[in-house]
Length: 235
Image 1: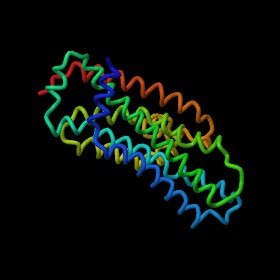
Image 2 (image 1 turned 180 degrees about the vertical axis):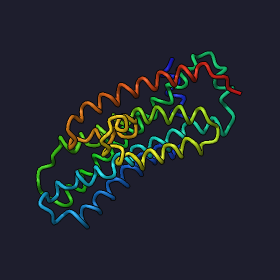
Image 3 (image 1 turned 60 degrees about the horizontal axis):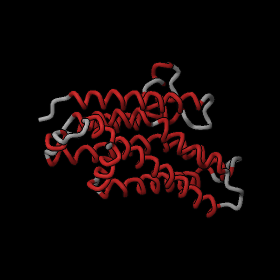
Image 4 (image 1 turned 90 degrees about the horizontal axis):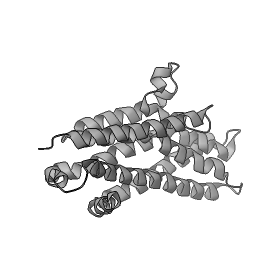
């Protein structure tokens, strides 16, 4: 049943959601390439410094993308006042919520995939060095997996509030703060979900711990969000 809901959700999803995955990846690739070309290409690490440059922007792009996509996916029902009709259908409410989560995860995974493709193209354009596939793939996909708690939180906020100003504001602030949170010494600050994508980089010691935390906390947040959504009165 949930797969039928996912198909229905995909059919009515706005086209801009698909374009946003491309825009995110292209924007990240271009920012990385430009920053590397202007400031890092003459450094001792050469073209490999591009991965450090990507680190500067990756968490921001992933978190901002999750914020915007969650707002668009949920805003459709708010704008058309379709929540009451949708939730009167003979399907579990939690499935409706999770079908939106599935599409958000798919779209963010596509962003990571397109980023790998874009960075591979830039690599081939600038150098004849062998492509370091390990780092090329891990960097974007680790950030994608570690961003799950923030994605789940944004989905809950976007379904909870008809006015999307608050969810978007929280998401943008979290995206901007992500790199600063990752550099904090206090563990409780690093435990905030917006810090996970930056901490998941292969450059960071014990980064696998943060990926595990991201997937675990993200799953927990999605479960809590779906339960709350199922019990909430919608008018």
